[in-house]
Length: 429
Image (tube, rainbow, N blue to C red; front, top):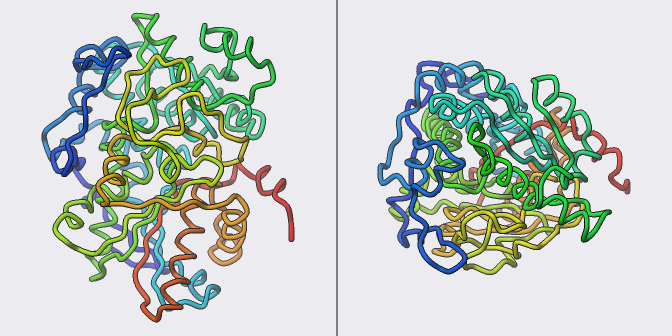
């Protein structure tokens, strides 16, 4: 471990060798996945679109899962990522709390999504799969999986939500550069896409609809599997590399967190940070696990807990989650990665059992704090990350007013260098 310019960096030898699985630790076990008639879906039924090893991880009873050597080698290109003390931000806010951010923007794709993209591509290659189909909202996941597919010699087709493709065209450029085929969703290629366009030719699209298109394609081709960048248990498992590193980094400087904060769309970023700390929360340690979600798509704070589909065309199994409804089409906000109607079953369980909480952040709150962060820490955060940043700033100010400064950690889940149109379009004071 080294500390340089407020940055706490682990050595390559300290890279975690296992992912942390909290499924067996949840106070209320997750309900099974279900079919439309309410019957339980056996894990083997998912074999039509997922490799066996990912299905095993989806329902694994093991608290620790080994990270394969080829994935570790790929991780080591940029991991461990630094935990940075945001001293200039603290000074600008005039708070005594210590604010740290886990900088996940340093991956080849520029976001945390590479943590699971590489794992999923590896397991599919090992299973003899030649192609992947996936969706992407703002493009971070599509970029990450396109790079991972290139790394493990897989072909890939990406269905990118129409409004995000229009807002962030350079994401498509990067995906195409990596050899991916990128389609605007809804498309004319799938039944789900054609049905959506027939209903509303001007639809901006949604993540739920793009998922429908990718799942439909994967289910119809024996050489193709589906990859999802969030929501599912195995995705959150791979993302625990974030929280595991944070644990080591805080311990190396003798610190314990009072708040762990990440933005929330489907749950991979938030779950990746907080899941490794759930055992401490269960043991009674007072750590606040806070999900920052957009006010325009408040699945955790205004959604209903129950069984719902993960996609608009209702091709996925029914899963236990907080949801605004599979048919919900969020407003065309620039934080495209947070435009999802539902939430991870694991995150939903943490919220339902009171182990974690969620709060909403408006687009203007996120933009204003992103500007402050850029002006103080000289990094431009992704619009999604800015929601976590905004909630962190608010909590630091609350602690200052209460006279109880603490330690706050948030995830800078990605950089905003391909989101500059969002900054340009934001209204100025």
